[in-house]
Amino acid sequence: MAVTATCPEIKDILAGNECLENFGGLSVNVYIFNKADLKAPLKAEKNVYPALTSESFNTGKGLYKFECKESSQGHTFESLGRRKGFKQQLDYVLESVNAESAEVARALNNLDLGYIIQDGEKSIIVYDPQHKFEYASAGIKGDTGKKADDDRQVELSGTLQPSAYGRYEITEPETGGWDSLLASKKG
Image (cartoon, rainbow, N blue to C red; front, top):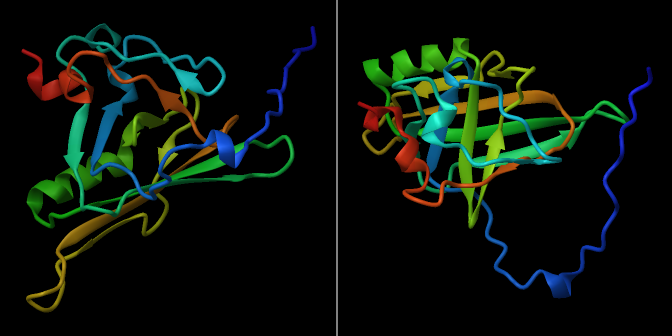
């Protein structure tokens, strides 16, 4: 039996309807979750995922919070061609180069993860139940700097592809925000 797919309707996008500030960049907080910690894969309605709750995760599991460098986080997307979907890219910077950040970088490089980051009043989720977010060669780079005024940081840049939409949003928990789902707050 043939699968029927319905394309989204095209809509007007008018400057007069966009009465808000259009600041670039994203929040300093990046929230990460291990897909294996979910009780069931998340399912989007078009390009919006329903809110996560503590019941979304296996016992003792949840989100992990990275407080990143100010004005260094970004999400981009690009078409992979007609009927091939989109590639999403997430960039963020940790202001730490030490044994702990090296251990976390190894986990990020090898685990199957999802990412949530606030974009003003909305939250972007970079996640797909079937495809992995991956860091290509040099996608994770640590640098101690050479001079006293250099930044010590780990730059992370990874991609998820293919996805049906270039941007997916997720509803933030009403009580306590994303911090209410941190694994470190679970007993």
